[in-house]
Image 1 (cartoon, rainbow, N blue to C red):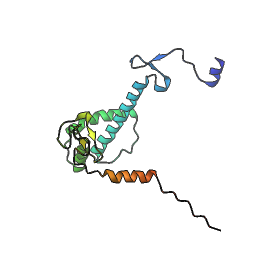
Image 2 (tube, rainbow, N blue to C red):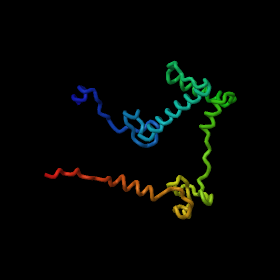
Image 3 (cartoon, rainbow, N blue to C red):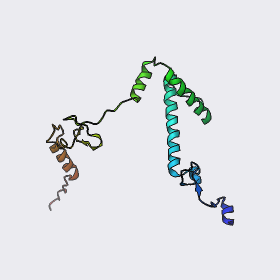
Image 4 (cartoon, helix red, strand yellow):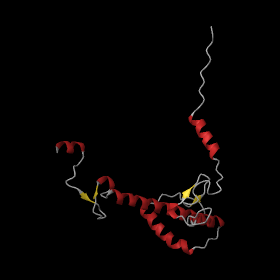
Length: 170
């Protein structure tokens, strides 16, 4: 006990439960949260900061904030801006471009040959396309990738030419 008083460290009296009451144990290093809750909290904070900066850039026309406000004021501004932002029409072409870049809709994954939905089981080829199980091999679809040149390049990189210098004959 005397050594802990000298170093300023305190030994925990017992295990501390997570402050989110998830049932796991927390630690002082993670603000008395378990690792999962702590990671989730950090992720939400980063997303809130990203949303605040992107909304601010849209509203202010791309200029970043130069004033230093406390975190509480940022959170209040974020809530106020999120309520105001949907009501504002997109009058600037640069703001509409940013909004279109953020809202990119990704359609279902389909085979490039037969257009069959493949979902998560699709096979991506070296030519850059996605194929179903039937068309996954290069001879089953019109593959534009040159396998012979790729193999020759791989062999030449793996086996460089090594020549010894010629010895001078006496």
